Amino acid sequence: MNIARHIALIDELCFRPFPAERGSSDVGVEGPGYHVAVLERSQGAADSECGVRATTVEQYEKDRDALYELLAPRWGHTAPMSLQTTLLRTEREEIPEPWALLSADARLAYVWEAEGTGRWAAVAVADLNPSDEVRLLAVVTEIDPP
Image: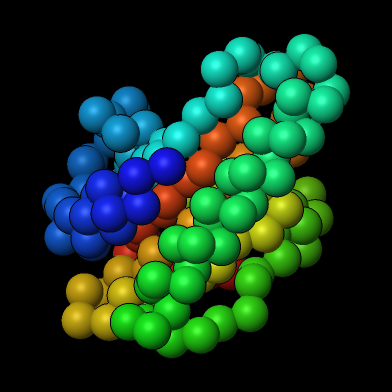
């Protein structure tokens, strides 16, 4: 993991304009009011060997926590946000993107109001879909967390 590169990208996304339409970007996906960047991704789509996937998830969780340790002094120490509650809410109410997308992919995220930008920033490990690769994600959005 290149933590300096990840922090620089998060900083850049805090000021990058949002697109008018949802689509792919040079770092992941984006849409009106949000950017989702893939900071790291596993090699295999599903990391077919269970032990390999578990090791990757564990490493990305450590990487997420390392990003938290660098961003928390800047934006404040926060408890992790459970995305499972948000996922359950998607069954009975409209949850805006990127939060609905993130809750379908990750269990928890560290979330901050990125001071001076008018945006929210989050880091999470996307590992809920066993048929998809494991990803370390950064999210920057102007949409308040649900």
